[in-house]
Amino acid sequence: MNYELLNIEQQEGILTVTINRETALNALNAQTLKELQFFFEQDAPQRMDYKGIILTGAGEKAFVAGADIKEFLGLDGTQGEALARHGQSVFFSIERLAKPVIAVVNGYALGGGCELCMACHLRIATQNAAFGQPEVNLGIIPGYGGTQRLVQYIGKSKALELMMTGDMLPAEEAQRLGLVNYVLPTKAEAIEKATALLHKIGTKAPLAIANVIQSVNAYFDAHVDGFEAEVKNFGTVTDTNDFQEGATAFVEKRKPQFKGK
Ligand code: DAK
Image (cartoon, rainbow, N blue to C red):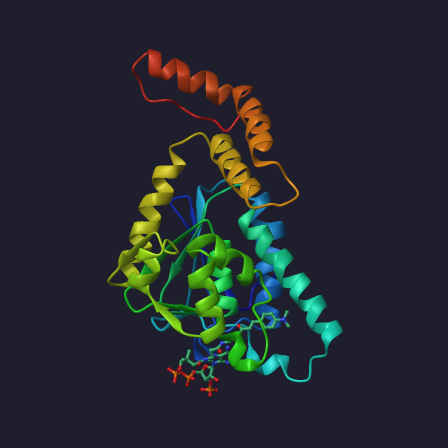
């Protein structure tokens, strides 16, 4: 795909994906969602040569200020349901990626933007970041998984308050509630922190990381017994060469050389 609204760069094994619609505060229009879908469903899973992904928004003001409201005028219920199902499937492809995805939230993360960063594995915010699900202001509800993931991160009481008032959560409050892993003063520092985390995770066994992600996701999947998923995934990683290497390296008091096999 020829990306028009995503800027994708690779440096030292880290892929940085920047949503590039700064004049519309990086609002998710259909084309952006299409490009995110292609990137996370087809492009990223095929690339072998990277440790993880940083997802961010262009500029200093917004990560993503929501779904593009201008595209939703005149929608009916059937179209709304189909679009929500489609958007959810795109966000699942981020959450289920076998490599870590860190959102660097550099400003507003509202509506679909808050939902997008919640589908990532970790969130690092700048001090000016603000999180919110203000869909009720428009007469709708979150449709890209927000009603589910916000509860998972911050609990039912606070999530209901945010979704019913449409209020924004400042970065430090979001960190206190567990939505955000770290808050840094600037975008450059947030990217630096995300990069350091991805390099650190990149020193671990890749299949172990993939199976941690899958097992933790299983906790939130009503159709899956998470403990059973953990047992199966434990079996999978026990069968890897990397497990032999990790255990042997420990005994031999040296650093393991993981190969992702
Ligand atoms: N959509 C389209 N354009 C947006 C936008 C958005 N969500 N947010 C901002 N913009 C555009 C503005 O229209 C403005 O464009 P111009 O007028 O210059 O052409 C430009 O970005 C700069 O915005 P402002 O001039 O408003 O900037 P301010 O600093 O004054 O205010 C703000 C920043 C973030 C407080 C304000 O822009 C704002 O309130 N934005 C809207 C926030 C919001 O309500 N977001 C939507 C949340 S609801 C669905 C599934 C999911 C969803 C919908 C449907 N289906 C399955 C059907 C999700 C819905 C949402 O995301």
